[in-house]
Length: 373
Length: 241
Image (tube, rainbow over the protein chains, first blue to last red):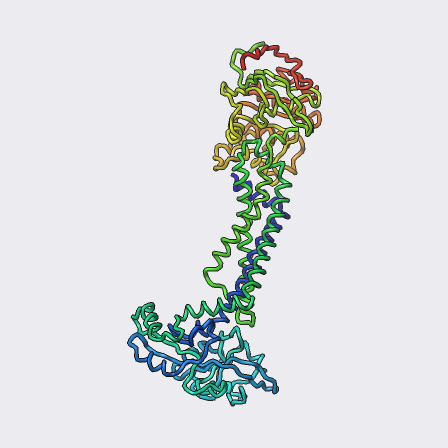
């Protein structure tokens, strides 16, 4: 009966219900889209690491993120490839350059050199063409979403990076970097572009053989190469993300905007529910006179908050799904890990309950004696 | 006319003080009353005489500053707020000066609210009973109407139905006719009289409207917080407290 009363009161008090609903939707949508952009940017930060296909990255000592390593000698490749735990070792070379656009202008790029035929660390999804394009030493691949920045060079067109001739051999997808526009090429071409000394690479990517205990194998590699950073792909990804989140202010910025969205939502819920309870104060006093205990009033108000928050979750997640659908494949970074929506829903319900506290406090003040004049 | 049955409600040396911001003021002097089933008791008196305070104490919505309240032989003076609420749910029906129906609930839901306010499902039997009561009060066609669509008299009859649905021992009414026209006021009083006499319940009506006095079996007059006359004329010795 209390739930029915809660529902009926919500239906009757349409304007205040709409206000509370707005607060919940604001929390779900605003926080949700902030989180999706945040996670999208996190993906950008560690995109090369996450899609490398390797189990371990070997880099220069004391590395703080994947973009800030020194060069590693090829002699370590020789030592690693002979280990029984290792299935393969591939070098990767990351440098910077200036991409010459068709209109004569330039665009700064990060060039990623990968070795044929495995192309580990190279592009993993293609819009036009495929990975075979990188078998040609002159070819590069660029991301579909960066084409506009590059002046829409057609497939097969010739241009220059750092005055080195390159050909746009394929258009890849989903490989957008946080630190700069990513361009993939052959190891040889990137060496030319970056002017790297011979026998030096940015990192060595290691894949363990099937059935190998990764933890033990990693420890063995670390013991074998004490002067280098030997890190699992997952750890390097986490380290890289942490580095950018804490050093670029992006974490603080998103944390602040998310907190503001939550705060605005909670305040909207709080004020609207409070006003609604004020309007219903006499009704709560009547209920108390009829035999409602304080806990019954508490259940009634909390039920109202829960009903509205569930409705708000439905509307908010629908709008969020629309947003994610619209921005998917666009230049706006967005990604929503599966674990986030349930957590987000839980936090939203908690916010609704928090917002209802003031109303609960007011409702519990209703004195049954006040109904007698 | 002294009833042979024991009183349903007994008040012993009941006083009530209020703090008016500067000093403690006694609004109800030491009062001793026995209230019996089967009669309609009217508490009358001018504004500020303490009749509503007395009714509120009878109904456990207000605690006395001194004295004891005995309901069906049980001292309920010191029950907790929670216990008092449950007592009100089980033993009392209220009819207020204004009908005080809950907007958003239908007529029938307003009546059933009195049963389900502490949670749980309302049984089909209770739903059936609510229909019977509302129909007997001439509201059979208004079961699913919102309160705003009812007239003042209809609303007050709904509030009587809300009091009756719990099958209470006591029905306490605070100026139930003051917001009604003469015709509806008379109808409401006839209903209350019937409930008291035919259903053998305690019905206490607070009123300063002399037109309702003829419906009472017993008239208690208060002035300045004191009972100044009681047509039952039953002495209640203070030593009974």
